[in-house]
Image (cartoon, helix red, strand yellow):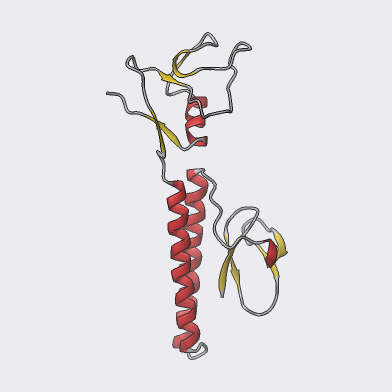
Length: 171
C-alpha cells in the first residue's frame, strides 16, 4: 500500500498495489486516474488547511499501520510485507515534515517604522484600493487612501496570512 494525495482537496488516499489505476477520494469524492494524483502533500501556504492535511495524513497512517499489524499477528500478512509497509509509514512521516516546513509562520518579518507605522512591502504586487484611485501604501498608519489603517483590521491580517508574513513586534 502507498500514499497518494487528492489533487482537489489534498487529503491522503489509500492506494493498494492491486494493479487498479483508478482513484477515489473519500473526503471530496474526486475520482480519477493514478497519473492525476499528487505524490506529496500540496503546500498551500494557508496554515489552517495545511494543519488539516497533516492531521488527516497522520490519522490515515496510524489507522492503516494498526490494521496491517493486526493482519500480521493473525497470520494473513507476511513479515516482508509488514516491513515494506513500515517503510511507507516512514515516507509518510517525511511527507508530514515537508508539509510543516512549508507552513512555518513568520517567514517574512515586516519592520515597523520609528513611530510604529508599517509601509506596504515593495515585493507585494497585489495592491489594495480603499476609498480612492491611489493604492494603499501603508499597512499600519496614515495611508495615501486617506484612511488610518490599524494592525487589527481584517484585511491587514488576511494580507499577512496570504504572504506568510508577520509585522515586527512592538518595541
